[in-house]
Image (cartoon, rainbow, N blue to C red):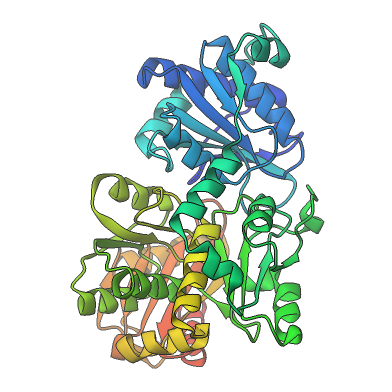
Length: 467
């Protein structure tokens, strides 16, 4: 029986040489080519790849399949980030953009992301069309990659330079390059390394070398994966802020001058404040269900609408494409803003924050304190609880039936179930339980006035649901 290929929340991902093979890749590429020509009625596409093992080879195979269908395909001859491919897709008015990447997954994986013509994730409806077109067998190769290049069906395109040009026309680069602030960047061996070196050559760099095995660590920009970066910042004594991005550079991690991690909840609030107060911008703010409720509080202060979506950037992107959206953000580090593409972009968000610091002359801590003065201090923490499938189903059923009236000493005052089960507690606190769809894990989130209080809620929730 052939391996069944299914797209997850952000593309198809599989282990290289096990399920992520040339045969299976060509099956996915065949379906994508048919979707582009039959459903989109387009004859152009863009393809890029990140720093993972075999990226260029997989890109060439995909481009060859597209060329077999008469699709004129623009390719990058060096690794690029997902936002770079998304931007190129819009600038070339291509039918779709393809990124050979497994994003923040472990190094043994590779993947296949599909970007729509507007420069963001293709909608679930369109991905479903692609899945239905995947053939059972690998389509035969007609001609070679080099032959298609000679015919002009595969075209080399410097999409990284186009991205750099867009950054330089959108930011005050003189201010960023010539102020007294010292910045640091950790690429996690990912695709953002060349871009940031070009934009900010005087920054301090870590893990900005080509290493397709990512030093045997998943390139996800969360604190437990960035301890070396954190220590470097804290010991330096002169670095004002550090930026980290994941394997394909669409997610952000941020640090203050003390090497303390600044989570996405705080980054989103900082971005809203800067865009409204310093840029004079407006629009709807779209945030995922697991984000801090302080986003709504800040939106109320500025007179902005806050729309809550299911978890997954594709839901945010759908709204950004159709509505006037100032910012779209999710808890996992994926954030997009008005004036750019409807796509997560860790480097772009980091530059906005650094421009905010440079223009105001304030530290990250000072800017966060100004946010706290508006909405109050807070912390959002998360546990990933490994449970048996039996316990997982039991707990979810209890959530669905509103059986939890308290978690330890915390009384439930209301609940929501947009994507998971959120229980509102006293004084703006809440706890949320969301089952993983693929493994026996419960993700439990809590928000409170500080980290210790949020951890206490998580501990009492864990004790309540597991006994």
